[in-house]
Length: 386
Ligand code: GDD
Ligand code: MN
Image (cartoon, rainbow, N blue to C red):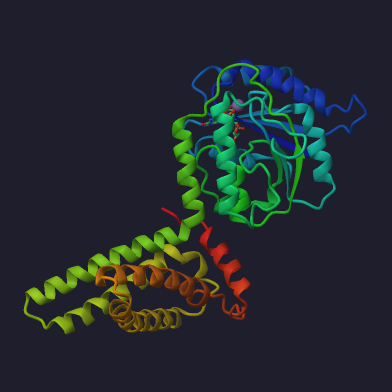
Protein backbone atom coordinates (compact mmCIF):
# COMPACT_ATOMS: atom_id res chain seq x y z
CA UNK A 1 0.00 0.00 0.00
CA UNK A 2 1.42 3.40 -1.00
CA UNK A 3 -1.19 5.60 0.59
CA UNK A 4 -3.69 5.45 3.45
CA UNK A 5 -6.51 7.97 3.15
CA UNK A 6 -8.04 8.79 6.52
CA UNK A 7 -11.52 10.30 6.52
CA UNK A 8 -13.08 11.32 9.84
CA UNK A 9 -16.85 11.25 9.60
CA UNK A 10 -19.67 12.41 11.81
CA UNK A 11 -23.04 11.95 10.15
CA UNK A 12 -21.87 12.13 6.55
CA UNK A 13 -24.01 9.31 5.06
CA UNK A 14 -25.01 11.19 1.85
CA UNK A 15 -21.36 12.00 1.06
CA UNK A 16 -19.67 8.60 1.40
CA UNK A 17 -20.41 7.07 -2.03
CA UNK A 18 -19.49 10.24 -3.91
CA UNK A 19 -16.27 10.63 -1.91
CA UNK A 20 -15.14 7.07 -2.63
CA UNK A 21 -16.05 7.43 -6.31
CA UNK A 22 -14.09 10.66 -6.74
CA UNK A 23 -11.08 9.40 -4.73
CA UNK A 24 -10.93 6.22 -6.82
CA UNK A 25 -11.22 8.20 -10.05
CA UNK A 26 -8.49 10.61 -8.97
CA UNK A 27 -6.10 7.77 -8.13
CA UNK A 28 -6.57 5.47 -11.08
CA UNK A 29 -4.09 7.32 -13.26
CA UNK A 30 -6.51 7.61 -16.19
CA UNK A 31 -5.60 11.19 -17.07
CA UNK A 32 -1.88 10.50 -17.36
CA UNK A 33 -1.08 10.56 -13.64
CA UNK A 34 0.55 7.70 -11.76
CA UNK A 35 -1.72 5.00 -10.38
CA UNK A 36 -1.57 4.96 -6.62
CA UNK A 37 -2.23 1.89 -4.47
CA UNK A 38 -4.43 3.26 -1.73
CA UNK A 39 -6.88 2.36 1.01
CA UNK A 40 -9.57 4.55 2.52
CA UNK A 41 -10.16 4.38 6.26
CA UNK A 42 -13.35 5.98 7.54
CA UNK A 43 -13.06 6.77 11.22
CA UNK A 44 -16.63 7.25 12.17
CA UNK A 45 -18.42 8.63 15.21
CA UNK A 46 -21.82 8.95 13.56
CA UNK A 47 -25.23 8.62 15.07
CA UNK A 48 -26.86 8.28 11.63
CA UNK A 49 -26.50 5.41 9.13
CA UNK A 50 -23.01 6.40 7.91
CA UNK A 51 -21.46 3.07 9.05
CA UNK A 52 -24.00 1.01 7.08
CA UNK A 53 -23.45 3.19 4.01
CA UNK A 54 -19.65 2.77 4.32
CA UNK A 55 -20.04 -1.02 4.51
CA UNK A 56 -22.26 -1.05 1.41
CA UNK A 57 -19.97 1.24 -0.58
CA UNK A 58 -16.93 -0.85 0.47
CA UNK A 59 -18.40 -3.94 -1.23
CA UNK A 60 -18.46 -2.28 -4.64
CA UNK A 61 -15.43 -0.01 -4.31
CA UNK A 62 -12.41 -0.44 -6.61
CA UNK A 63 -10.04 0.07 -3.65
CA UNK A 64 -10.01 -1.24 -0.06
CA UNK A 65 -12.42 0.74 2.10
CA UNK A 66 -12.16 0.14 5.85
CA UNK A 67 -14.42 1.31 8.63
CA UNK A 68 -13.51 2.08 12.22
CA UNK A 69 -16.67 2.89 14.07
CA UNK A 70 -16.00 4.37 17.49
CA UNK A 71 -18.53 4.22 20.25
CA UNK A 72 -16.96 6.96 22.35
CA UNK A 73 -16.23 10.15 20.43
CA UNK A 74 -12.87 10.55 22.21
CA UNK A 75 -10.99 13.64 21.06
CA UNK A 76 -13.63 14.42 18.42
CA UNK A 77 -12.38 14.97 14.88
CA UNK A 78 -8.72 15.05 16.02
CA UNK A 79 -9.09 11.87 18.05
CA UNK A 80 -10.59 10.16 15.00
CA UNK A 81 -7.63 11.20 12.85
CA UNK A 82 -5.14 9.81 15.39
CA UNK A 83 -7.08 6.54 15.47
CA UNK A 84 -6.90 6.42 11.67
CA UNK A 85 -3.15 7.05 11.72
CA UNK A 86 -2.70 4.14 14.12
CA UNK A 87 -4.70 1.84 11.86
CA UNK A 88 -3.08 2.93 8.59
CA UNK A 89 -1.17 0.41 6.47
CA UNK A 90 0.98 2.93 4.59
CA UNK A 91 3.46 5.42 6.01
CA UNK A 92 2.03 8.14 3.75
CA UNK A 93 -1.25 9.12 5.40
CA UNK A 94 -3.58 11.58 3.74
CA UNK A 95 -6.23 13.17 5.94
CA UNK A 96 -9.31 14.75 4.40
CA UNK A 97 -12.86 15.68 5.36
CA UNK A 98 -15.77 13.45 4.41
CA UNK A 99 -17.95 16.18 2.93
CA UNK A 100 -15.97 16.83 -0.29
CA UNK A 101 -14.92 20.31 0.74
CA UNK A 102 -11.44 18.90 0.14
CA UNK A 103 -11.39 18.00 -3.58
CA UNK A 104 -10.10 14.43 -4.10
CA UNK A 105 -8.71 15.54 -7.49
CA UNK A 106 -5.95 17.31 -5.51
CA UNK A 107 -4.67 14.07 -3.99
CA UNK A 108 -2.23 13.17 -6.82
CA UNK A 109 -0.58 16.57 -6.47
CA UNK A 110 -0.09 16.07 -2.73
CA UNK A 111 1.21 12.56 -3.32
CA UNK A 112 3.65 13.76 -5.99
CA UNK A 113 4.97 16.51 -3.74
CA UNK A 114 5.38 14.07 -0.85
CA UNK A 115 7.16 11.58 -3.13
CA UNK A 116 9.96 14.08 -3.69
CA UNK A 117 11.00 12.85 -0.26
CA UNK A 118 12.29 16.07 1.29
CA UNK A 119 9.36 16.84 3.61
CA UNK A 120 7.41 15.17 6.41
CA UNK A 121 4.09 16.76 5.64
CA UNK A 122 2.39 18.32 2.62
CA UNK A 123 -0.26 20.80 3.66
CA UNK A 124 -3.15 21.62 1.32
CA UNK A 125 -3.58 25.33 1.98
CA UNK A 126 -6.47 27.71 1.41
CA UNK A 127 -4.20 30.66 1.98
CA UNK A 128 -1.15 29.85 -0.15
CA UNK A 129 -0.93 31.52 -3.54
CA UNK A 130 -3.79 30.28 -5.70
CA UNK A 131 -5.77 28.71 -2.84
CA UNK A 132 -9.24 29.94 -1.83
CA UNK A 133 -11.59 29.54 1.09
CA UNK A 134 -14.87 30.31 -0.62
CA UNK A 135 -16.48 27.15 0.80
CA UNK A 136 -16.51 28.70 4.28
CA UNK A 137 -20.17 29.15 5.14
CA UNK A 138 -20.33 32.94 5.55
CA UNK A 139 -18.34 36.12 6.06
CA UNK A 140 -18.19 35.62 9.79
CA UNK A 141 -16.48 32.25 9.36
CA UNK A 142 -14.04 33.69 6.83
CA UNK A 143 -13.15 36.39 9.34
CA UNK A 144 -12.89 33.94 12.25
CA UNK A 145 -10.72 31.63 10.15
CA UNK A 146 -8.36 34.40 9.05
CA UNK A 147 -8.09 35.93 12.53
CA UNK A 148 -7.47 32.61 14.29
CA UNK A 149 -4.86 31.68 11.70
CA UNK A 150 -3.05 34.98 12.27
CA UNK A 151 -3.17 34.63 16.07
CA UNK A 152 -1.98 31.04 15.90
CA UNK A 153 0.92 31.90 13.65
CA UNK A 154 1.90 34.73 15.97
CA UNK A 155 1.91 32.37 18.94
CA UNK A 156 4.17 29.86 17.19
CA UNK A 157 6.31 32.01 14.91
CA UNK A 158 9.08 29.43 14.64
CA UNK A 159 7.17 26.20 14.29
CA UNK A 160 4.61 27.62 11.85
CA UNK A 161 7.04 29.70 9.82
CA UNK A 162 6.48 27.72 6.61
CA UNK A 163 2.75 27.14 7.02
CA UNK A 164 0.07 29.50 5.72
CA UNK A 165 -2.87 27.30 6.78
CA UNK A 166 -2.16 25.45 10.05
CA UNK A 167 -5.92 24.96 10.59
CA UNK A 168 -6.59 23.01 7.44
CA UNK A 169 -7.94 19.49 7.72
CA UNK A 170 -6.43 18.41 4.36
CA UNK A 171 -2.82 17.18 4.47
CA UNK A 172 -0.52 14.28 3.76
CA UNK A 173 1.83 13.28 6.57
CA UNK A 174 4.48 10.64 7.09
CA UNK A 175 3.29 8.62 10.04
CA UNK A 176 6.88 7.99 11.07
CA UNK A 177 7.30 11.73 11.65
CA UNK A 178 4.38 11.89 14.09
CA UNK A 179 4.72 10.98 17.76
CA UNK A 180 1.24 9.48 18.10
CA UNK A 181 1.55 8.88 21.84
CA UNK A 182 2.59 12.47 22.42
CA UNK A 183 -0.59 13.90 20.92
CA UNK A 184 -3.50 15.08 23.06
CA UNK A 185 -6.14 15.65 20.38
CA UNK A 186 -9.15 17.74 21.21
CA UNK A 187 -11.49 18.78 18.47
CA UNK A 188 -10.77 20.05 15.01
CA UNK A 189 -7.16 21.25 14.82
CA UNK A 190 -5.09 18.08 14.72
CA UNK A 191 -2.61 19.31 12.10
CA UNK A 192 -1.82 22.33 14.25
CA UNK A 193 -1.07 20.09 17.22
CA UNK A 194 1.26 17.89 15.18
CA UNK A 195 3.16 20.86 13.75
CA UNK A 196 3.57 22.45 17.16
CA UNK A 197 4.62 19.38 19.14
CA UNK A 198 7.57 18.54 16.90
CA UNK A 199 9.56 20.24 14.16
CA UNK A 200 8.32 19.17 10.72
CA UNK A 201 9.66 19.75 7.24
CA UNK A 202 6.68 21.26 5.49
CA UNK A 203 5.61 21.83 1.89
CA UNK A 204 2.36 23.42 0.81
CA UNK A 205 0.03 22.95 -2.12
CA UNK A 206 -2.73 25.53 -2.66
CA UNK A 207 -6.32 24.29 -3.02
CA UNK A 208 -9.85 25.59 -3.36
CA UNK A 209 -11.93 24.84 -0.28
CA UNK A 210 -15.17 23.81 -1.96
CA UNK A 211 -18.81 23.87 -0.87
CA UNK A 212 -20.13 20.91 1.05
CA UNK A 213 -21.51 18.13 -1.16
CA UNK A 214 -24.38 17.39 1.26
CA UNK A 215 -25.27 17.72 4.92
CA UNK A 216 -24.12 20.44 7.26
CA UNK A 217 -20.98 21.59 9.03
CA UNK A 218 -20.25 20.35 12.55
CA UNK A 219 -18.25 23.45 13.40
CA UNK A 220 -19.75 25.28 16.35
CA UNK A 221 -19.07 27.91 18.95
CA UNK A 222 -18.20 25.01 21.22
CA UNK A 223 -15.51 23.90 18.77
CA UNK A 224 -14.23 27.48 18.81
CA UNK A 225 -13.88 27.40 22.59
CA UNK A 226 -12.19 24.00 22.37
CA UNK A 227 -9.78 25.56 19.93
CA UNK A 228 -8.86 28.44 22.25
CA UNK A 229 -8.35 25.98 25.11
CA UNK A 230 -6.19 23.84 22.86
CA UNK A 231 -4.14 26.83 21.77
CA UNK A 232 -3.47 27.83 25.38
CA UNK A 233 -2.68 24.25 26.40
CA UNK A 234 -0.28 23.86 23.48
CA UNK A 235 1.52 27.10 24.14
CA UNK A 236 1.64 26.91 27.92
CA UNK A 237 1.37 23.13 28.42
CA UNK A 238 4.13 22.35 30.85
CA UNK A 239 4.29 25.88 32.12
CA UNK A 240 0.61 25.88 33.11
CA UNK A 241 0.96 22.76 35.22
CA UNK A 242 4.14 24.17 36.73
CA UNK A 243 2.20 27.34 37.58
CA UNK A 244 -0.65 25.42 39.21
CA UNK A 245 1.78 23.48 41.38
CA UNK A 246 3.53 26.74 42.26
CA UNK A 247 0.16 28.23 43.24
CA UNK A 248 -0.66 25.23 45.43
CA UNK A 249 2.73 25.66 47.07
CA UNK A 250 1.99 29.29 47.90
CA UNK A 251 -1.31 28.30 49.54
CA UNK A 252 0.41 25.55 51.51
CA UNK A 253 3.10 28.01 52.56
CA UNK A 254 0.58 30.48 53.99
CA UNK A 255 -1.33 27.64 55.66
CA UNK A 256 1.74 26.33 57.46
CA UNK A 257 2.74 29.79 58.66
CA UNK A 258 -0.80 30.37 59.97
CA UNK A 259 -0.90 27.01 61.77
CA UNK A 260 2.57 27.29 63.33
CA UNK A 261 2.15 30.86 64.56
CA UNK A 262 -1.25 29.88 65.92
CA UNK A 263 0.51 27.23 68.01
CA UNK A 264 2.91 29.83 69.32
CA UNK A 265 5.90 29.19 67.07
CA UNK A 266 8.03 32.27 66.36
CA UNK A 267 7.10 33.96 63.06
CA UNK A 268 10.56 33.70 61.53
CA UNK A 269 10.91 30.00 62.34
CA UNK A 270 7.40 29.38 61.00
CA UNK A 271 8.25 31.16 57.76
CA UNK A 272 11.44 29.17 57.30
CA UNK A 273 9.77 25.82 58.05
CA UNK A 274 6.89 26.67 55.69
CA UNK A 275 9.27 27.70 52.91
CA UNK A 276 11.34 24.53 53.18
CA UNK A 277 8.33 22.21 53.35
CA UNK A 278 6.86 23.94 50.31
CA UNK A 279 10.11 23.68 48.36
CA UNK A 280 10.34 19.95 49.01
CA UNK A 281 6.64 19.43 48.22
CA UNK A 282 6.97 21.39 44.97
CA UNK A 283 9.93 19.31 43.94
CA UNK A 284 8.07 16.05 44.52
CA UNK A 285 5.07 17.28 42.53
CA UNK A 286 7.00 18.56 39.52
CA UNK A 287 9.10 15.38 39.48
CA UNK A 288 5.93 13.35 39.29
CA UNK A 289 3.72 15.51 37.06
CA UNK A 290 5.67 18.09 35.07
CA UNK A 291 9.05 16.67 34.16
CA UNK A 292 8.38 12.94 34.48
CA UNK A 293 9.22 12.46 30.79
CA UNK A 294 12.68 14.00 31.26
CA UNK A 295 13.80 12.18 34.39
CA UNK A 296 15.24 9.26 32.43
CA UNK A 297 17.82 11.35 30.60
CA UNK A 298 18.54 13.78 33.43
CA UNK A 299 21.04 13.44 36.29
CA UNK A 300 20.14 11.36 39.38
CA UNK A 301 17.28 12.27 41.70
CA UNK A 302 19.48 13.60 44.53
CA UNK A 303 21.38 15.79 42.12
CA UNK A 304 18.10 17.13 40.72
CA UNK A 305 16.81 17.73 44.23
CA UNK A 306 20.00 19.54 45.25
CA UNK A 307 19.78 21.88 42.25
CA UNK A 308 16.09 22.56 42.71
CA UNK A 309 16.48 23.07 46.48
CA UNK A 310 19.46 25.40 46.06
CA UNK A 311 17.69 27.42 43.39
CA UNK A 312 14.50 27.91 45.39
CA UNK A 313 16.37 28.95 48.52
CA UNK A 314 18.55 31.35 46.56
CA UNK A 315 15.45 32.73 44.89
CA UNK A 316 13.83 33.50 48.24
CA UNK A 317 17.00 35.12 49.56
CA UNK A 318 17.44 37.28 46.46
CA UNK A 319 13.80 38.21 46.00
CA UNK A 320 13.19 39.80 49.42
CA UNK A 321 15.87 42.53 49.10
CA UNK A 322 14.67 43.22 45.56
CA UNK A 323 11.15 43.81 46.85
CA UNK A 324 12.54 46.10 49.53
CA UNK A 325 14.59 47.98 46.93
CA UNK A 326 11.58 48.40 44.63
CA UNK A 327 9.37 49.67 47.43
CA UNK A 328 11.93 52.15 48.72
CA UNK A 329 13.23 53.57 45.47
CA UNK A 330 10.35 52.96 43.04
CA UNK A 331 7.52 54.08 45.31
CA UNK A 332 5.43 51.02 44.49
CA UNK A 333 3.37 49.27 47.08
CA UNK A 334 4.79 46.15 48.72
CA UNK A 335 1.95 44.06 47.30
CA UNK A 336 2.63 45.13 43.69
CA UNK A 337 6.37 44.68 44.13
CA UNK A 338 5.84 41.21 45.59
CA UNK A 339 3.51 40.27 42.75
CA UNK A 340 5.95 41.47 40.06
CA UNK A 341 8.89 39.63 41.59
CA UNK A 342 6.81 36.47 42.03
CA UNK A 343 5.90 36.45 38.33
CA UNK A 344 9.50 37.04 37.27
CA UNK A 345 10.66 34.38 39.73
CA UNK A 346 8.11 31.94 38.33
CA UNK A 347 9.43 32.34 34.78
CA UNK A 348 13.06 32.12 35.90
CA UNK A 349 12.22 29.05 37.98
CA UNK A 350 10.60 27.33 35.02
CA UNK A 351 13.57 28.17 32.81
CA UNK A 352 16.01 26.93 35.42
CA UNK A 353 14.18 23.65 35.98
CA UNK A 354 13.68 22.81 32.34
CA UNK A 355 17.18 23.83 31.25
CA UNK A 356 19.33 22.94 34.25
CA UNK A 357 17.62 20.63 36.74
CA UNK A 358 16.20 18.33 34.05
CA UNK A 359 18.90 18.86 31.44
CA UNK A 360 19.97 15.67 29.68
CA UNK A 361 23.09 14.22 31.35
CA UNK A 362 25.50 14.41 28.42
CA UNK A 363 24.35 17.60 26.76
CA UNK A 364 26.46 20.64 27.50
CA UNK A 365 24.39 23.34 29.16
CA UNK A 366 22.99 25.63 26.51
CA UNK A 367 25.10 28.73 26.31
CA UNK A 368 23.90 31.11 23.62
CA UNK A 369 20.70 33.06 24.27
CA UNK A 370 19.18 31.75 21.08
CA UNK A 371 19.74 28.13 22.15
CA UNK A 372 18.03 28.85 25.46
CA UNK A 373 14.99 30.35 23.74
CA UNK A 374 14.79 27.41 21.35
CA UNK A 375 15.06 24.87 24.14
CA UNK A 376 12.49 26.70 26.21
CA UNK A 377 10.10 26.84 23.29
CA UNK A 378 10.66 23.12 22.85
CA UNK A 379 9.96 22.39 26.52
CA UNK A 380 6.88 24.52 26.78
CA UNK A 381 5.02 22.60 24.07
CA UNK A 382 5.74 19.11 25.37
CA UNK A 383 2.56 17.32 26.44
CA UNK A 384 2.15 17.71 30.16
CA UNK A 385 -0.94 19.87 30.45
CA UNK A 386 -3.92 18.89 32.57
N1 GDD B 1 -15.05 11.01 13.47
C1 GDD B 1 -15.44 12.28 13.65
N2 GDD B 1 -15.75 12.73 14.91
N3 GDD B 1 -15.51 13.12 12.59
C2 GDD B 1 -15.91 14.40 12.80
C3 GDD B 1 -16.26 14.91 14.07
C4 GDD B 1 -16.18 14.00 15.18
O1 GDD B 1 -16.46 14.33 16.32
N4 GDD B 1 -16.61 16.21 13.91
C5 GDD B 1 -16.50 16.48 12.60
N5 GDD B 1 -16.09 15.39 11.91
C6 GDD B 1 -15.84 15.24 10.47
C7 GDD B 1 -16.97 15.68 9.61
O2 GDD B 1 -17.90 14.64 9.40
C8 GDD B 1 -16.23 16.04 8.33
O3 GDD B 1 -15.95 14.91 7.55
C9 GDD B 1 -14.93 16.62 8.86
O4 GDD B 1 -14.76 16.08 10.14
C10 GDD B 1 -14.94 18.15 8.92
O5 GDD B 1 -16.08 18.57 9.64
P1 GDD B 1 -17.04 19.72 9.09
O6 GDD B 1 -18.26 19.71 9.93
O7 GDD B 1 -17.22 19.59 7.62
O8 GDD B 1 -16.20 20.98 9.49
P2 GDD B 1 -15.87 22.30 8.67
O9 GDD B 1 -16.07 22.16 7.21
O10 GDD B 1 -16.59 23.38 9.33
O11 GDD B 1 -14.32 22.40 9.03
C11 GDD B 1 -13.34 22.10 8.11
O12 GDD B 1 -12.61 23.22 7.85
C12 GDD B 1 -11.81 23.66 8.92
C13 GDD B 1 -11.06 24.87 8.48
O13 GDD B 1 -11.92 25.95 8.36
C14 GDD B 1 -12.41 20.98 8.58
O14 GDD B 1 -11.55 20.65 7.49
C15 GDD B 1 -11.55 21.34 9.70
O15 GDD B 1 -10.58 20.30 9.94
C16 GDD B 1 -10.83 22.58 9.32
O16 GDD B 1 -10.13 22.99 10.46
MN1 MN C 1 -16.72 20.71 6.05
